[in-house]
Length: 48
Image 1 (cartoon, rainbow, N blue to C red):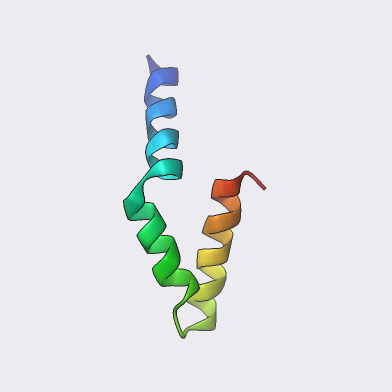
Image 2: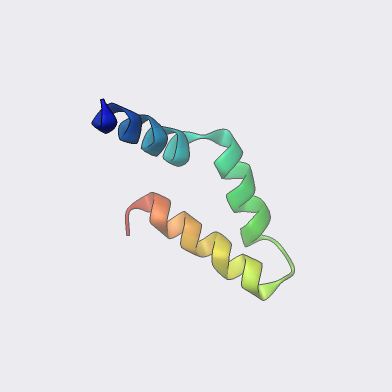
């Protein structure tokens, strides 16, 4: 059961349109720190 919950969280995190919008907002933000955070989120989701 714990594995299923983990899979659901992972699926939501990696495939959610809300996360896509958050990632885009962070990457294209004028703040360098937030842009770096957005890029880290992007690379984490890509599996690197």
